[in-house]
Image (cartoon, rainbow, N blue to C red; front, side, top):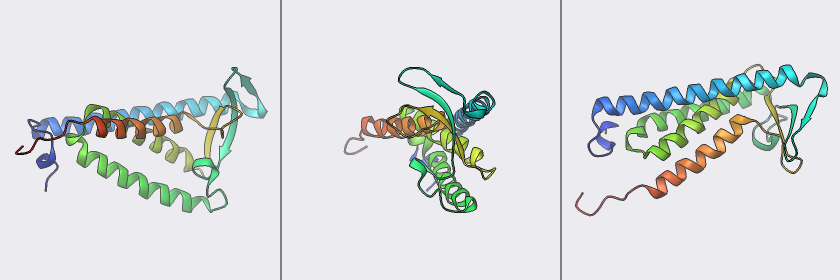
Length: 169
């Protein structure tokens, strides 16, 4: 079954291509923004510098694992390979189902893919992901982590709030 066949009613093949393209462009913009901010954090926070902003502190940390440092003892190539496969699968699913998604779900998918890609690219040097946002009560994280978490929430919310087809439609 083609992706166009599963698109929302009234979505042409051209519109479906545009929806997919917009999703990918936004994901790329978010990944690039994340990587630029990580570069800035590395430049400004070398030598253990910290900035106290009250509830949030800015400090540099490298996470060789994935969420909450899980897998930090594994070889970097294993983390890179596994996360690369997961991102490839997520990208394929998001691209193929984008025409059928609500706008909220597509926004969530763009955030999820942008954050995941930003962390993946950051990880490729073998040093781990640059984290710089610290609360004191939660593990240190970065903007890509915020993108991923927010993206998943928006995707789920968009799916739950999507209009349901009526019987006979």
